[in-house]
Image (cartoon, rainbow, N blue to C red; front, side, top):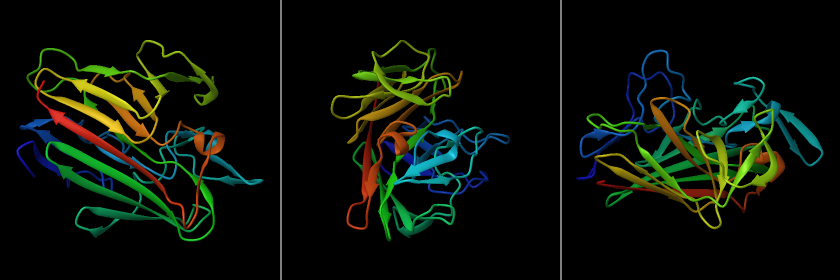
Length: 261
């Protein structure tokens, strides 16, 4: 694609559909965890999350006095929305569209756009209502390799959130904001203005920023690190919903600045 990005593409061997980035190579170095047989759809590459992010408690969506039961794909919760497995269609060269349904209670669609600007990868998501008003969230779930081929150490992760969302015993945020705690993490963090984080390997670096204020950091796996730009915290579709209407889409953009170490 240019001197920095050798490829941003799907791997045809993978069984999972959707506009997932499976191969992102910087100067010939693969930086994403790849699909292998037995690896599930939520466990590699970078995929969009819509119309909610992370865990939705019990798969239950509360909106204006009604309760909607959505599919529970990681009991007891509904995880990462439907974009990972949905039937996306390519509407333009770098634009993909997903019709939300039939399980989503409203007529709506999601659009992901992918662009390259110099040494930057720019991803954007938009959730659009065809009729009615509903809550929604959006974000991305990338799986970065903990150690690149030929490196002698693990990646260094730098970020400076203002708070950490406290987790309850049910793996959902309690709504209480606490001081950021040392890792390893499977936690959501909030930022004063916009989220920003940096991954530094020996031979490459990626600075990730977003026009929104949240990210989940997942550093538990031995071979990967996840830095997830989000429009709100997990289960926030219930606890701090952002309303989408025909004249008011939800949008989020993240930019990945790739460079040498």
